[in-house]
Structure formats: C-alpha cells, structure tokens
Length: 216
Image (tube, rainbow, N blue to C red; front, top):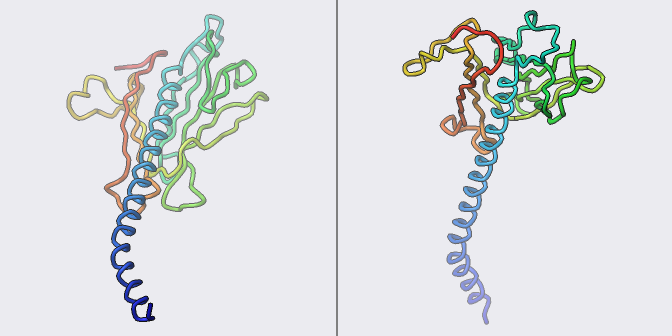
C-alpha cells in the first residue's frame, strides 16, 4: 500500500471515529456530573437530618436534672458564622435510651458540659475554595472538651430562624423569640457546577421543638 493510500485511510478512519468518541466523552462527563450532584444531594439530606435530630432532642430533661429552669436549650446565633451565616447551639440532658451526637458519638455523662450534652452547627471558611464554606459540627469529647468536625463541604449559606406555625399557610413569619418551630435553609454549590448558579442545591426544612417552653 502506498503512503498516499495509508494517509487517506487514516484520515477517513479519524473522520469516522472522532464524532462517536467525542459523543461518548460528553456522555461520560454528563453522567459524572449527575452522579456528583446526586451524592451531594444525599450529603445535604444527611446534614439536615443531623441538625433536625439535634433540635428535636434539645431541651430534653431527666427527672433528676438540676437545670430545669436555668438553661436555654436552643440558641440561634444570627450572623455568627463565616460570611454572616447563622449558627445554632443545642443542649439537653443525657437520654435514657442510647443517643448520638452529630459526630456519631454516643451521648454519655463524660461527653457533657455541666451535665448537659452540647452540639453546635455553624459555617467555617473553606481553605480550598474561597467561594464556598464548610458546615461544621461541634460537640464534646470524653474529657469534656469541645471538638469539631466537618459534615458538609461547598456550602454557600446557612439560614436559621424561629417561625410562627400559624403563618406557614402564607409567607412564614420570622420571630425573634422561641416559637417551637425552626426553619433551616441550606444552599450548596455542586463541585461540577461552580459557574452555574442555576444548579445550586437549596433545601428548606421546618423542625418542631419537642421539649422546652416556647410561644407559638
């Protein structure tokens, strides 16, 4: 076969194979983006579930508690996190049945501050990406010292408020005092869509307080 024939055959094969190869490449990229977003959505759900569980347990008091009327079990800290994000502090007595904190540690007497289990959720700057933040969980170790860990990355914002339950049929009414109902809005930027604001994952949850005094 002559050199010209070889070059012609190579050119024709390139023309025939390049479009399918490019198409397959695009399909694989799109599939990877879908999988990444799905996993990120699962992580958002898990993080909100951790916060919801801590809120529902906050204010629980054992019958022998010495702090029945002296401890505010839920504290919403407006603008106290990174980039003016909100934070929430939750305390409770150690439950009779086995319970866990936001880091997966069993709630025990050793992991308390003044005999109260302690959890705090807040935002912290992301060292690897200045555009996003990290959702952090703070609890107590076996020596009674505060320690923290990351539970979600690529967070854009965290908003936490008391809302009045009777206003949910219309525009939720924000309250500055405890109402027994908390709304949490978490916004996360998937890694594959950093330049596409329309792809931001945003979830809002309403969590009812099970224990303690409040004004609905």
